[in-house]
Image (cartoon, rainbow over all chains, first blue to last red; front, side, top):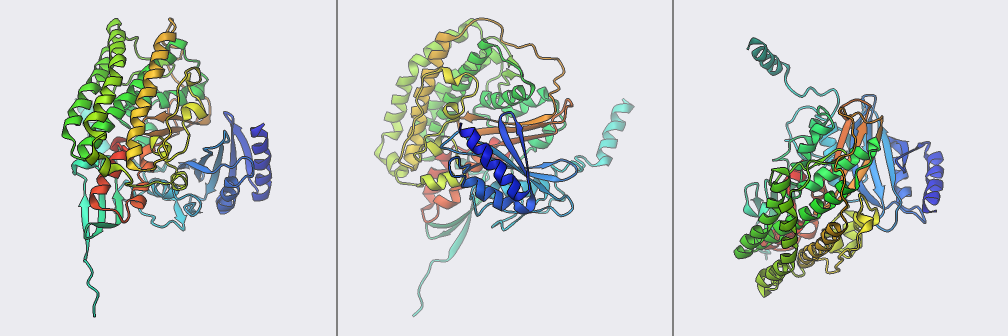
Length: 162
Length: 367
């Protein structure tokens, strides 16, 4: 019953922001462009009967073609859940910050910036959170080389030598 | 006439400060004794778990989850293996589900006992520290009987449990459950009933309901702010819908209620374990799972109620033996965000009280 209401709202929203709707394990997934993320999330937060007003998680994903920022929405007052995925360009990874909507996105966006290099426009303090400020590269990207090749070669030679 | 003003002082707390529960550092700006700004700094324990997961198979990642919230490691195992099971569509045997509940709730009690001990210690209640740790030792012994490990137990497997608990486990468990109400009375009488302790905790660090919801706070911290939300009730995972238990909710919004709510939760955990012991069926503890775990292409987000808050796993599979993305939603990492907001304008001693009642574990904050 509740789910039908949410279904309708999400479908309506998807046509308005030009997004796609999918379903996976009983949770609706709404894929949108990075430009319309603020509008989408503001609307999702204020769905009249099924507000998805609790930002449960925010994370970056690298699909090798583009980055995704995944928002897990839920509510503390109902069973509704929604996953919003915003596509971010790999060459120019810029997206609006959702800190004006949920203050709790602060650290989560900093983490996504730290790990993927996604720039959140309008974030109050967009700095690396886990790694040090001079760290080069963004380690969670798929093209990040995890160990220096020279080290790997030295280790391999030693193993093969024995 | 010039107005005399105290010079603003920048002070570092941590990473090696005893009240920081690990390697957490904050840069505190103070005017006299009053806090004007707090900048939390983390990452001293960052191990890059999410990146490590991408080069490990699904089963190989289970021991890593132990090292997240190392005070309640069975719970982290549980969250991870359930996510993979959901993705693969594995049915876990009844007995294994009951054993998972027993170990999960034992972990909750153990974690809350450490919370009680460390909160007391942070507020200079040295005696209670050793009492609570003495009692927690009995739970660690029970872990050791079953899994062989004491802290990072690594007790769950995809599809079931590592091992059947031995006979002496059940006698140890029953005697532990019988003694727990007395322990709680002791904790309260020894420290939290004390006027000085209450003076340090009451009306300190007020986290209103609206702010808590806006900051994505979860777990006991949220429930101490008057929000009745527990994943075990709201979205029952495993077999939690079969047990009769209450979710303690307090409306004080302060550090004192955040402490007392943990004591209430221990009482409810005892209830759950007692029911589980009563109802546990016989049978196998492992489902038939293929040797090589290869979930179908897809993605799933699953969350469990950790003692510290909601622990979420978002796993994306590309159909190979290694996950393409594992996202860990650490509860205390998000809960820590309240610290700079609520501590503003308070005194330096209050930081310690607020940080203690957040119950942050740096293994989870830093991943």
